[in-house]
Image (cartoon, rainbow, N blue to C red; front, side, top):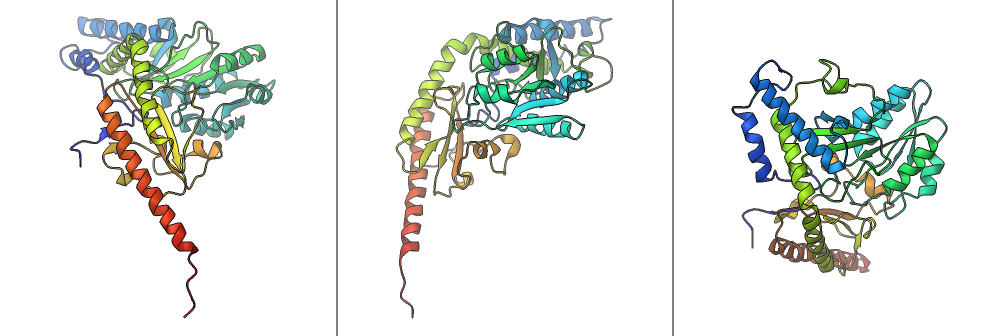
Length: 390
């Protein structure tokens, strides 16, 4: 039976804005529309207070100090600012960077650009489960390594890297560690007071907040060279008029994420596990990435010997890879040694998915995959038939 609206299961691409977040934002699109930098009058002062309150809310989710939070337009800008900013701040004596083959394109492409500027980059290949060996990471660091960049949670397969151990290695070797945490906020606890992390990229729209706003955590005394010049906003780290309403939205969605973490994650994990239980016994289905070291909402599977375009999967909304590389083969699956001819499905659950939706999705996907497998088997049998020569 055709649904009027597909079940939305692409929360790793973006999440719907929580109604409570929208409510918090609206005043700053109406009467409280002032520029936070206009401190001479009440409009600007009201906006500035809202910006600082949001900065405190974002910092609270990380257990950071609010002075360590700088606003950006999103995780892509944060990644660029962290990697380029650290590279150029220390580039006279250190010219080497390290990252992982499964990183987001905003990291990989930034690293490749820095190679054109005279830097050397080592890209570590992960194991087949998506995790990186500590020994391989340590071996990649050199005396002239300025920074390593490793995602906390992979945006496609959802695996969680051991950032604490990686950071400890970096500390011992005098290397800065940047972490893309866009997919981690609200999914697992983050404590930069204990984690040996120097720079962390954040965004709102993966955590039920608005698009177009993000932040970069910069640990105190870590040098980062500004990449966007102008009015010297954000303590000189990033110039540009601050979008008060979006910043307020990010602060509120991070506040809600912190309060909901303990109850939301177990509920979503139970839904995800029920979905996986309904699919795992289908011939040709395999899980991509480690299952234990994975965020609760992510299920990434490959269906071998099956051509199932996601355009025909109309009653649920899922993706095959990162939204940023739509239409291309997944570099993440390739790095795991996966079969690129297989149909890859990234199913990511969220705050507003109901048990009934998950049960529907399980039955619907099972039907689609089973039909695809049957068609593939029939075609294989047909290809083995020896036709007489006439």
